[in-house]
Structure formats: structure tokens, C-alpha cells
Length: 283
Length: 160
Image 1 (spheres, one colour):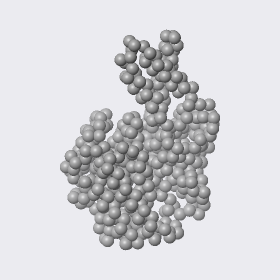
Image 2 (spheres, one colour):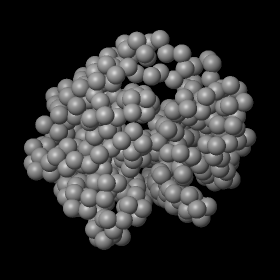
Image 3 (cartoon, chains in turn yellow, orange):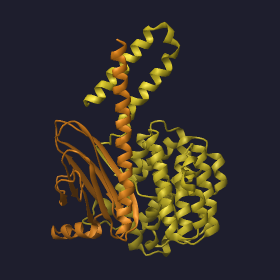
């Protein structure tokens, strides 16, 4: 702890003691105490963990599946009407990630109407989570609406959306929640990429799945750190851990010498589990 | 007593202000790094700032980046907001793995900016006998040397 911080602590401590001992000011004590605690906590908000992870952006996540094949089918995306069902913070954050991936899926497939629908879903969820203000700065919402059919421009604007939501969460001491959002985005990407697996190049698909499965541990860590998760989010976490155990027990993973190649059967098992968890997330 | 309290209160306000100012400067440097990336004709793909306090001991902080998502990432570091020495080490595996290889090093980033591409890092990886196809993540260690107590931050931005 540096000198400034020590002085802050001593100073706030003295202010608290003085305010408590003075009858005239006793009525103001709770407010003063609240302020002091917030100021001290601000230091911790900006001290990073010893080991951290750069959470991939939804655009990078979803577009990375393009090489392995990613056909557009509108009904595969989460229905924006489902937003009304998401009443817990955990479900709202997970599905903020889901709709972000659906938006990227629409953009890279040149589906303007679907992009608009998914963008509106994200905006509605942002309002519910309390971070609707991220779209007000520099009229981000209007910029997105104006450029919704321009993949390149949208890629940059989506990064803005992502960064502002991250900054919002950081500024409000809710860094952990960014990882919850990432988990939703990751599952949706994996879900969209694992349709029609029989028709896809198995080698390419296996390579993509193995690469992406390295991100599962980060998604698990993120949900584990989120202590206020409700029952529904806890169930998602339990299923994610089960997926990881199943994957680690695959022969091609256990016996890998070099980069593992999943068998068609293993791809099907992973796919089924991912689809099951995704249903749980959006339900 | 009143004077003492006033003085302490002033220190408190000044510290809070100084703290906010530090954060604002760091946030500005994030914007600048994004400009540096686009100025080089690359696309921007995100930022991660690592905050710390210099102390009497050397400390380590690390970050992991999934590198398979883009064809050729470029890593841009900004150490302008670190008064003490910070060395950046880039590895193929996590710190708990005794077989990890150091693929790149930036000796002291303090007060400076530096960048390195994935292509360059992979050259070193191949030299050590690694297969670039298998390198899904990079692990970056910040070695924060002992220094007089002050706040510090290193920002990493990704371009591709």
C-alpha cells in the first residue's frame, strides 16, 4: 500500500470517527461512510489479477468458424422474443453474448434484416442490464443502424459496442460479468458452427473445435468467479464442466501426440453437448 | 483538530483526483494505441490494460491470448504509464508448465511503446521445433521490477 493510500485510509477513518462523535452530524454518518468505502474500493477496481485472459470479441469468435463452414439459417439464432424470459442478471448477460454472436452471424452472412433484429435485441438487453447508455455515446446506435449492411464498418462498430460494455462493467466494479457475457457469445458461436457436421470437412472442423475448446476453461473460470449466479446460471456452469470432462476423456485428446484430431464420433458427442447447453442458456 | 482534518481531507481529495487522472491518462493511451494500429493499415481487435503497483519486490502479472482467431495478430504495447522497469516476456505455454519456451522479450517497456507480430513470434517458435498450427494461445508475462511505490499500467492492443 503506498503513502497516498495510507493517508486516504487514515483520513477517511478520522472523518468517520469525528462524524460519529458529533451529535449534530450523526444523521449524515451513513452517507459519509458509504462515500468513504466506495473511494477506497476504487483502488481495487484498477488492480489487475495476477493472471488474466484477453476475452475474444464476438466478431473474432464467430468469423473464425467461417473456414470450417458456417451456413446461414435464420431459425438457428435465438428468437429476440425470448428476451422477456430473461429476468436474472446471469441469464441477461449470457444472452447478451448470445445475441452479439447472432448479430455477427447475420453480418458476415449479409443478412441485413436479421442484423437489425439482433441489434435491437442487444439494445433491449443492454437496457435491462442497465448499460443502455453505451449506445448513447457518440450516437453509436445510429452509426450501427446506418452501417448495418457494411461488414467492415460493422466489425469496427461491434468492437466499440464490446469495449464500451467492458468499460461500463469495469467502471461499475463488475469486471467479472464480462466473462459471463463472453461465455454466452462463445456457446452461440460453437452452436452455430456445429450444424450439418456430416457434410463438413472433418479435419477442418476438428481443428476448429479443438482450438475453441481451449476457450472453454476461460468461460468456466468466468462463471465460477460470478458468485451471485442464480440457480439457472449455476446449472449452465455445471453442464459446462461436464462438457470439459467429457472432452478431456476423449481418446484423441488423452493420447494426442501433437495437435489432436477428433474422431467423427467425438465431434458428434461434443456437438450434442454444446447444443444441449445452448438450449439451457436461451431457455 | 479542525486544521488537521482539513489537511487530511485535502489529501484525500487530491489522491482521488490523482487516481482518476491516472486512469484517464491510461484510457487515453488505449485510444492512441488504436490509432497506431489503424495508421499501420491494420484492423483493431481489442485492448487489455494490466494495472499494478510498484513495490519493494519484483512481481509478475500475466495474460493469455487466444491467437488462432485471426491470421496474423500484431501486439502493440504501451508502457508510457509505468515509471519503474517492466519487462515483457512472451511464451507458448502457461507459467505452471516447466517446458514452456520464451519466444520473445521486450527488455524494458517503461515510458515507451513497442510492437511485435505473430509472424515474428512464430519464426522463433519454428526455430525451437514448434509447429505453428498447434499454437492456439500465447502467454505474456509482465515482470514488474522493484521500484519506488507508484501506480503503473501496461496496455496491450491487438491488431490484425
